[in-house]
Image: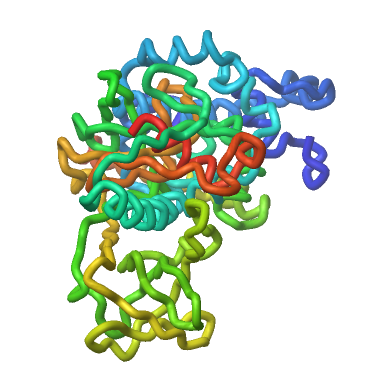
Length: 73
Length: 343
């Protein structure tokens, strides 16, 4: 992921599921604290953290998939 | 630092490290010596850049009006970098409040349409009453009592992916960013034929003798209306009842609210408003639009919690409870007042 182009990362984010995009958007675009996100989504703080982690894992996977496609073309 | 993992930083510390706002000495010391955590922080930095890149695509530039707003109202529009703002305790209720705003708008608009129509001889006539929320700029309006909320209303000029541009009555172009959680919808004038068995409705009307005489019936996604009863002009003893329609007949229907059936009488002057949920690309260019959301994010755009097409420029009455005193608290009412103060 660290070597990915930011535009690639942005494209990969768009392929994520709604829950993942939502939590990423609230934290990084709306610039809310995780406690605020928990309040908004009406979930425990731990759930926000786990969704964030899951979102990043999914993002890494999406980038890997994209990279694999690129190398097999 | 995490109590669960004494050897590595938890996600909050990692994000703070990315922002450059990690204050804890132990955490800083750990980060300096731990390549695993530095690598983890770098991954989060990339994720954040990706998200902000998307936001930048939506809102490519920080609009002058928002910069002006920051200068003029530093307490309302954050002048500190967003990364620092993250550390400031923000109002935790803002999004929950925004969630009810779209429907609350309808409740207010509907009730006010009826009042306005009676006063001016036409539904949708624009009333003279104005909101009292402070204006943070020529186009963006702060929400009284909600330090992190702002709203805008005007004509939809452009839809670009998830980004919107609204032109206010005084000609300012305001960029709006929507996120997946943004509630987007429209309200339109309907007719009594839109009220069918099984429909979800919010009925606004006086209830002098146990039966509701409906001034407005809102049909559609009205589930969020219930927590909020809009301000009513003095002397108008109206309230909002939310429920499911049964037993539609000439001259009325029954609304079942909290398991209780309530008789509703409709007349020729009952206004019907229909609500629809939309995607951003279904919004109509040129339509009168209101949006409310978090004050500008990293990309400079208002990050919308709710965007709503409404059929006409509207304003709200300054009824009991909507004055400055009560308006100091953050509420759906103060949000709506701010949204409509430029209408």
